[in-house]
Image (cartoon, rainbow, N blue to C red; front, side, top):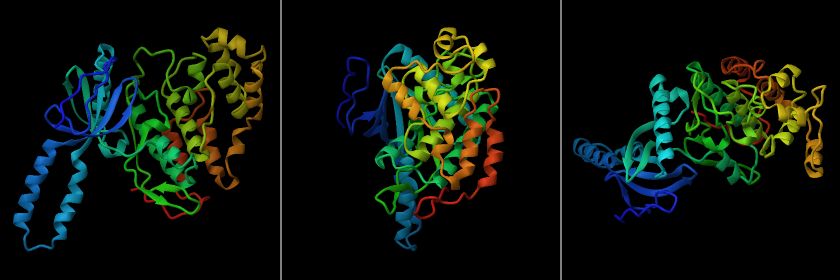
Length: 384
């Protein structure tokens, strides 16, 4: 195999395709690159060798069977040899943070039945040339990448409902032991595979709506010291923006933003600025509770954004103000026949975190809508 290259100038692993990592994992392709490091798809040579031993043994014992049995064995086992490895940059603070993330994923995997938690599975960890490496199950594309691949054509409502149920089940599980993910977004929700079903109209839907939540790098237990700012901007809860104090409910706000985005094919709050973000929330969701504004530790922001009556001042640059004014209430983005979905969003996207429903309560609400009317054409989607 090709030699393992030296790191780049900021500590990223530079190994090329076909190089072997830790004498066990052959690099097949890149999956993604981020500030933390690099994710690559690899063939686990140890599992592959064992698979071949099992395969040869199977052939010797089953000569009287139909030749298709060999193909069946291959199909069942090949995918088990493919893994994803998160190779963290060769930088001390990233290395140390990765150890904490791995410990959290191990805790998540250990506490629950793996298949029921909808969280990524960690197989192993090791150190390689100064890089901390996490061996994870190999999954399909993120919901963001799938949406982008369809030119942001929205997911059908029955897909959105399946995603909602699984995300709420995930949060019910994580929040049961007071673990807050803190960075839920479509990029961190992966389909189990990338297979698609073409539809009339030139777009596709996923063959399966099964998903897994990844990236626990920012996950925090509720009793730990917390950062002031968490979440990616567009999925950030109002209590985080205002520094009121955040906890498990902030994850639910993120889920509400995600579901609305998957439903309409675009961000619910397309902003990069606190003042504008608060204005958009007020326009779409409603006024901020006065008691919440009084509790805010970000006093300067409250004074700049809101008047003495708790209404947004709307003192924004012309373009931003025009964008905010064009923003319609939440009701306007949901079709009449999907009224149940609007009711779900209204129960999640509640400005005051103390009034926001918990995951288990939202799941009970969702149970009433097991088979929502299909708005968009196409065949049924097999979730399981």
